[in-house]
Length: 214
Image (tube, rainbow, N blue to C red; front, side, top):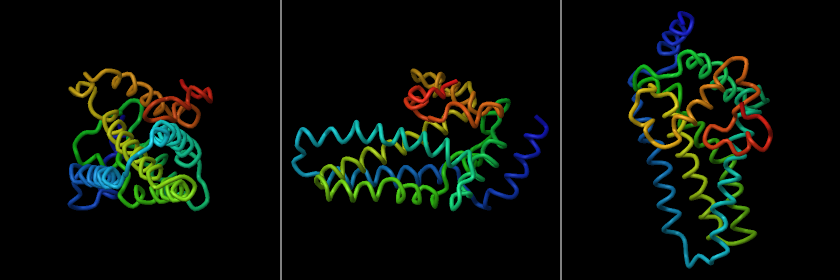
Protein backbone atom coordinates (compact mmCIF):
# COMPACT_ATOMS: atom_id res chain seq x y z
CA UNK A 1 0.00 0.00 0.00
CA UNK A 2 2.89 2.36 0.75
CA UNK A 3 4.37 1.78 -2.70
CA UNK A 4 1.00 2.55 -4.23
CA UNK A 5 0.67 5.75 -2.21
CA UNK A 6 4.18 6.79 -3.24
CA UNK A 7 3.39 6.19 -6.91
CA UNK A 8 0.10 8.10 -6.65
CA UNK A 9 1.98 11.08 -5.24
CA UNK A 10 4.55 10.79 -8.03
CA UNK A 11 1.86 10.57 -10.70
CA UNK A 12 -0.04 13.58 -9.36
CA UNK A 13 3.11 15.67 -9.23
CA UNK A 14 4.46 14.68 -12.65
CA UNK A 15 1.55 13.65 -14.87
CA UNK A 16 -1.43 15.80 -13.86
CA UNK A 17 -1.09 19.25 -15.47
CA UNK A 18 -1.50 22.31 -13.32
CA UNK A 19 -5.12 23.45 -13.48
CA UNK A 20 -6.38 20.05 -14.59
CA UNK A 21 -10.10 19.52 -13.93
CA UNK A 22 -11.57 16.01 -13.69
CA UNK A 23 -15.14 17.26 -14.23
CA UNK A 24 -13.89 19.37 -17.15
CA UNK A 25 -12.25 16.30 -18.69
CA UNK A 26 -15.48 14.35 -18.35
CA UNK A 27 -17.49 17.23 -19.82
CA UNK A 28 -15.19 17.25 -22.87
CA UNK A 29 -15.89 13.56 -23.44
CA UNK A 30 -19.62 14.11 -23.00
CA UNK A 31 -19.55 17.05 -25.42
CA UNK A 32 -17.50 15.16 -28.03
CA UNK A 33 -19.63 12.01 -27.96
CA UNK A 34 -23.10 13.50 -27.46
CA UNK A 35 -22.39 16.26 -29.98
CA UNK A 36 -21.35 13.68 -32.55
CA UNK A 37 -24.41 11.54 -31.81
CA UNK A 38 -26.76 14.52 -32.25
CA UNK A 39 -25.07 15.44 -35.54
CA UNK A 40 -25.40 11.87 -36.79
CA UNK A 41 -29.06 11.57 -35.74
CA UNK A 42 -29.91 14.81 -37.54
CA UNK A 43 -28.15 13.51 -40.66
CA UNK A 44 -30.24 10.33 -40.92
CA UNK A 45 -32.74 10.29 -43.77
CA UNK A 46 -35.60 7.79 -44.09
CA UNK A 47 -33.75 4.87 -42.52
CA UNK A 48 -34.80 1.55 -44.03
CA UNK A 49 -35.54 -1.41 -41.71
CA UNK A 50 -32.46 -3.35 -42.80
CA UNK A 51 -30.20 -0.37 -42.10
CA UNK A 52 -31.15 -0.48 -38.41
CA UNK A 53 -29.18 -3.74 -38.15
CA UNK A 54 -26.11 -1.50 -38.20
CA UNK A 55 -26.63 -0.71 -34.52
CA UNK A 56 -26.27 -4.25 -33.06
CA UNK A 57 -23.51 -5.13 -35.55
CA UNK A 58 -21.61 -1.97 -34.62
CA UNK A 59 -22.04 -2.80 -30.93
CA UNK A 60 -20.41 -6.20 -31.48
CA UNK A 61 -17.61 -4.58 -33.51
CA UNK A 62 -16.98 -2.03 -30.75
CA UNK A 63 -16.90 -4.75 -28.12
CA UNK A 64 -14.32 -6.65 -30.20
CA UNK A 65 -12.21 -3.50 -30.70
CA UNK A 66 -12.33 -2.89 -26.94
CA UNK A 67 -11.17 -6.45 -26.28
CA UNK A 68 -8.39 -6.51 -28.88
CA UNK A 69 -7.16 -3.00 -28.08
CA UNK A 70 -7.03 -3.74 -24.37
CA UNK A 71 -5.42 -7.16 -24.73
CA UNK A 72 -2.88 -6.50 -27.49
CA UNK A 73 -2.14 -2.75 -27.39
CA UNK A 74 -2.71 -1.61 -23.81
CA UNK A 75 -0.89 -4.58 -22.26
CA UNK A 76 1.77 -5.29 -24.90
CA UNK A 77 4.16 -2.75 -26.40
CA UNK A 78 3.31 -2.38 -30.10
CA UNK A 79 5.53 -0.36 -32.39
CA UNK A 80 4.01 3.08 -32.91
CA UNK A 81 1.53 2.61 -30.05
CA UNK A 82 3.89 2.37 -27.08
CA UNK A 83 2.40 5.52 -25.56
CA UNK A 84 -0.91 3.67 -25.10
CA UNK A 85 0.89 0.73 -23.44
CA UNK A 86 2.88 3.05 -21.18
CA UNK A 87 -0.12 5.04 -20.09
CA UNK A 88 -2.26 1.99 -19.38
CA UNK A 89 0.10 -0.69 -18.05
CA UNK A 90 2.88 1.45 -16.60
CA UNK A 91 0.67 4.19 -15.17
CA UNK A 92 -2.99 3.18 -14.81
CA UNK A 93 -2.19 -0.26 -13.39
CA UNK A 94 0.32 1.17 -10.94
CA UNK A 95 -2.04 3.94 -9.85
CA UNK A 96 -4.94 1.50 -9.40
CA UNK A 97 -4.03 -1.87 -7.93
CA UNK A 98 -6.29 -4.69 -6.80
CA UNK A 99 -5.69 -3.44 -3.25
CA UNK A 100 -6.47 0.21 -4.00
CA UNK A 101 -8.98 0.54 -6.84
CA UNK A 102 -10.74 3.76 -5.87
CA UNK A 103 -9.93 7.34 -6.79
CA UNK A 104 -9.18 9.68 -3.92
CA UNK A 105 -10.57 12.82 -5.59
CA UNK A 106 -11.78 14.20 -8.92
CA UNK A 107 -8.22 14.99 -10.03
CA UNK A 108 -7.56 11.25 -10.27
CA UNK A 109 -9.83 11.18 -13.34
CA UNK A 110 -6.60 11.92 -15.22
CA UNK A 111 -5.49 8.35 -14.46
CA UNK A 112 -8.79 6.83 -15.66
CA UNK A 113 -10.17 8.74 -18.65
CA UNK A 114 -8.50 8.74 -22.05
CA UNK A 115 -6.73 12.03 -22.80
CA UNK A 116 -8.53 13.98 -25.55
CA UNK A 117 -5.66 13.35 -27.98
CA UNK A 118 -5.88 9.56 -27.55
CA UNK A 119 -9.65 9.72 -27.80
CA UNK A 120 -9.47 11.47 -31.17
CA UNK A 121 -6.71 9.04 -32.24
CA UNK A 122 -8.81 5.94 -31.50
CA UNK A 123 -11.82 7.50 -33.19
CA UNK A 124 -9.76 8.22 -36.30
CA UNK A 125 -8.16 4.76 -36.30
CA UNK A 126 -11.17 2.52 -35.62
CA UNK A 127 -14.29 4.52 -36.50
CA UNK A 128 -13.64 7.02 -39.29
CA UNK A 129 -12.19 4.60 -41.89
CA UNK A 130 -14.95 2.05 -41.25
CA UNK A 131 -17.62 4.75 -41.46
CA UNK A 132 -16.29 6.00 -44.80
CA UNK A 133 -16.15 2.45 -46.14
CA UNK A 134 -19.74 1.79 -45.04
CA UNK A 135 -20.93 4.97 -46.75
CA UNK A 136 -19.31 3.84 -50.02
CA UNK A 137 -20.44 0.21 -49.82
CA UNK A 138 -23.95 0.67 -48.42
CA UNK A 139 -25.42 4.09 -47.64
CA UNK A 140 -24.92 7.28 -45.70
CA UNK A 141 -27.52 6.10 -43.20
CA UNK A 142 -25.46 3.00 -42.41
CA UNK A 143 -22.39 5.18 -41.86
CA UNK A 144 -24.27 7.59 -39.57
CA UNK A 145 -25.80 4.70 -37.59
CA UNK A 146 -22.32 3.19 -37.19
CA UNK A 147 -21.08 6.54 -35.89
CA UNK A 148 -23.97 6.75 -33.42
CA UNK A 149 -23.26 3.27 -32.08
CA UNK A 150 -19.51 3.86 -31.91
CA UNK A 151 -19.76 7.14 -30.03
CA UNK A 152 -22.40 5.77 -27.66
CA UNK A 153 -20.24 2.73 -26.98
CA UNK A 154 -17.19 4.88 -26.32
CA UNK A 155 -19.12 7.07 -23.89
CA UNK A 156 -20.45 3.95 -22.19
CA UNK A 157 -16.87 2.63 -21.93
CA UNK A 158 -15.59 5.79 -20.26
CA UNK A 159 -18.51 6.08 -17.83
CA UNK A 160 -18.33 2.43 -16.77
CA UNK A 161 -14.55 2.50 -16.37
CA UNK A 162 -14.83 5.67 -14.30
CA UNK A 163 -17.51 4.04 -12.15
CA UNK A 164 -15.29 1.01 -11.46
CA UNK A 165 -12.77 3.33 -9.83
CA UNK A 166 -15.24 5.10 -7.57
CA UNK A 167 -15.32 4.15 -3.87
CA UNK A 168 -17.35 0.96 -3.39
CA UNK A 169 -19.82 2.76 -1.14
CA UNK A 170 -20.76 5.08 -4.03
CA UNK A 171 -24.49 5.31 -4.64
CA UNK A 172 -23.89 4.51 -8.33
CA UNK A 173 -23.31 0.86 -7.40
CA UNK A 174 -26.99 0.58 -6.61
CA UNK A 175 -27.49 0.38 -10.39
CA UNK A 176 -28.22 -3.25 -11.38
CA UNK A 177 -25.15 -5.17 -12.50
CA UNK A 178 -22.63 -2.37 -11.98
CA UNK A 179 -21.03 -3.81 -8.86
CA UNK A 180 -20.62 -7.17 -10.61
CA UNK A 181 -18.89 -5.52 -13.59
CA UNK A 182 -16.64 -3.65 -11.15
CA UNK A 183 -15.59 -6.94 -9.57
CA UNK A 184 -14.58 -8.29 -13.00
CA UNK A 185 -12.46 -5.20 -13.58
CA UNK A 186 -11.09 -5.41 -10.05
CA UNK A 187 -9.90 -8.94 -10.82
CA UNK A 188 -8.21 -7.67 -13.97
CA UNK A 189 -6.11 -5.32 -11.84
CA UNK A 190 -4.42 -8.20 -10.02
CA UNK A 191 -0.81 -8.22 -11.32
CA UNK A 192 -0.93 -11.98 -11.90
CA UNK A 193 -4.11 -11.67 -13.98
CA UNK A 194 -3.97 -8.38 -15.88
CA UNK A 195 -2.22 -9.67 -19.03
CA UNK A 196 -4.37 -12.82 -19.26
CA UNK A 197 -7.96 -12.20 -18.16
CA UNK A 198 -10.94 -9.79 -18.23
CA UNK A 199 -10.09 -7.53 -21.16
CA UNK A 200 -13.64 -6.36 -21.85
CA UNK A 201 -14.11 -3.28 -19.70
CA UNK A 202 -17.80 -2.91 -20.54
CA UNK A 203 -19.58 -6.19 -21.26
CA UNK A 204 -17.51 -9.42 -21.20
CA UNK A 205 -18.80 -10.79 -24.52
CA UNK A 206 -15.43 -11.55 -26.11
CA UNK A 207 -13.85 -12.56 -22.80
CA UNK A 208 -16.51 -15.27 -22.76
CA UNK A 209 -16.01 -16.19 -26.44
CA UNK A 210 -12.20 -16.36 -26.18
CA UNK A 211 -12.10 -18.01 -22.75
CA UNK A 212 -10.35 -15.12 -20.99
CA UNK A 213 -12.95 -14.37 -18.36
CA UNK A 214 -11.67 -14.91 -14.84
